[in-house]
Image 1 (cartoon, rainbow, N blue to C red):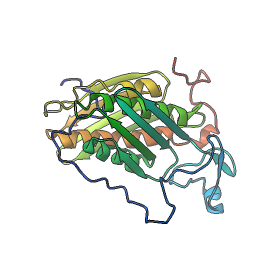
Image 2: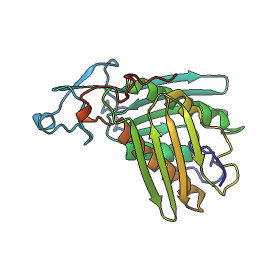
Image 3: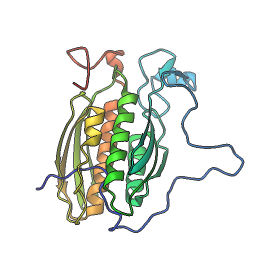
Image 4: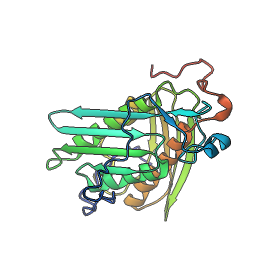
Length: 262
């Protein structure tokens, strides 16, 4: 089984353009991207006393260890190069809202999976030299998402840290194991039959976020299904790792007392 990068594959020649599924706000409504307009590090008041009593947050996951507030976990990155212009925002405590326009329709579809199955709010806008190749856009979007994730995680206090999920999609099945350890490592075992898919180095997300990531393909022969199952498994594993462990009571999940990228 060959080693191939798992994120942001170039499938623009394999799939026809797909319209974005993100709903457009009604004219005059004033609605926009579903991200709260507040400074980073501010606090969100719980929506009801039921949440406080049950220890469940707005997305159904355990609340942060504070009694009445939960710190917002947001990351935002703008990356401009000669080849690309990328703007990424991510809210780890979101509700699964996706708003992506990357110039690569299949990538937009995969980012929808990341948001929906991870219950993250994901905003990605990118322009690039896709008329030449998808490589620069794929790489720079991965760099920006990894950096935004790093910002949103902060000191990683109170989180589960580890995530493990296996997702099937028809004949395909992919297992993802990850550790938000601060130590970048990627082991990827995907065998994708379509030419040009997985030919680009996408270790960028792992490097910038400080994540140990293992991906194992259990079954599959359809490129679309293999890649989509990978995104779904990654989203669920990342959701598991970023959610709060109530028993930890806000402490860093490491015997060393720190999770760094060194």
